[in-house]
Amino acid sequence: MKFYDPCLDDEDEELVSKARELGWQNPSKYDTLVLDEGEWGKIKRKVDQNRDEIHVLGVKGGGQKINREAVSDPRVDVLIHPGKDRKDSGFDRGTAQLASRNNVSLCLDFSRVLEDNKQRTHVLSEWRKNLGLCKKYDARFTISTFAAAEHELRHPRDLMSMIESLGFSGSEAFNTSEAIIERNSRKLDSDSPSGVWKR
Image (cartoon, rainbow, N blue to C red; front, side, top):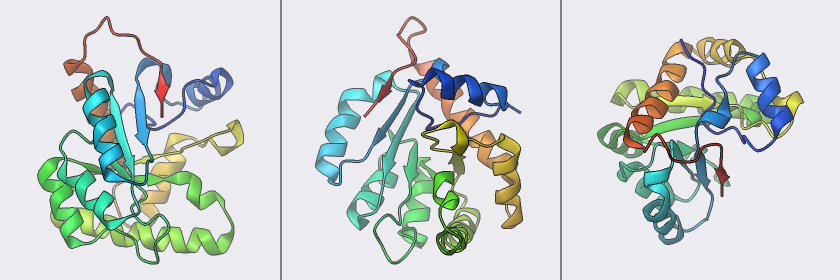
């Protein structure tokens, strides 16, 4: 199994080096675009402009419209944190069904569990609910460290164990990341520049 962190910032050379030491695939070998615009119209324009140049295209959710539109667009690879700034998880039956139909994966943001214990308990409860919906409606899921510094990185198997502690398959998360990157790698020109983190 190959361990890809689908949304790791690859411009920090020390971060990349530490990630490789821990067993992650070299993130400078694939390009990631994470869109956090707060408005679907702006997100869609950037998807239109960048989809053909990117290995992993993610959308940070939160608003109901953004969550639904993201999982309705098969050009989006991952929906990240659909519960952002919400009291609920932002991921319901309809969202899970659309994600399954359009092959858009739910991406768990591991950095959220590094906060205080109260926040960690809330996040894990949210993950359990969302992963249950993924399983029920055959939607894929993955996980990223979203590390901004070396101390926020973890060994891939630590993330796998956390998912398994919730009663779900940790290997499935990494199989999904690998499938996304390999699928899009086949679509991209092998001579295109890599290692660019775009916002």
